[in-house]
Image (tube, rainbow, N blue to C red; front, side, top):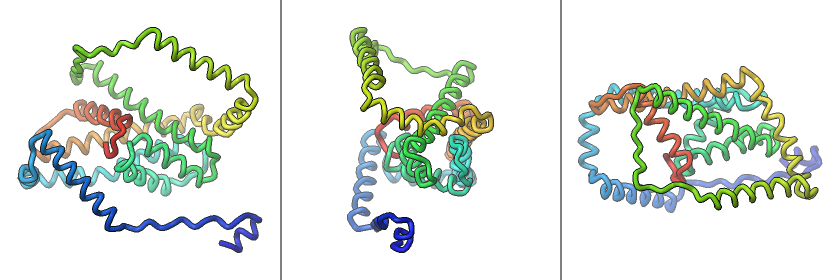
Length: 275
């Protein structure tokens, strides 16, 4: 490390500190599981004995089918991530990235986890910070677009009836508040365009991000972004369907897609890890 730094004429990079599993971290996990158990017991009135009984009566063949399908979901999502970048990245590391995102999402809300880990990954691949951030955002935005498309197609085709009653809930925004927000946005744009000290760093970041936006003009990249996300959503629906069948119930593919898509949308915006 020292010889490489001397040859490059830079300071030796700091070593990454190792973080090992400690008794404290295990106790933290145990306390979280205990808290989750009490919360589920209080809300759903479900005890451990009932959960164990359901598993004993479950059809293990369907559970194994779901278990086999689960690892294929990150593989499909890796094609979406490859579609979001023009960098020469190999498929293998991107698949590893998608598995890492699934793991990190247990502790961080899923959308934040995906963008953060994507940014770090593409920085390690040589992309500037702004370009790495843009790649992560493109990947996340196309995932959201695919979920919205699925919702619209399923609901408006009449395959599933979606009844979300909002009776008694007043969500109408105030006109004055909207005007105030609009004025703040306009003022921020004017300041960013007219003040040189603010305009220069913004222009530099936009120039760094411009290569990442080239994927939107490529049919192959768009196919990867849309196709990878669509396949991932179908695989997740199939996993959910296999689990439902394992416990003696059934659901149509449209119902499974709708349920999974709604859960994915809420999990992406809720500040609660693990979905």
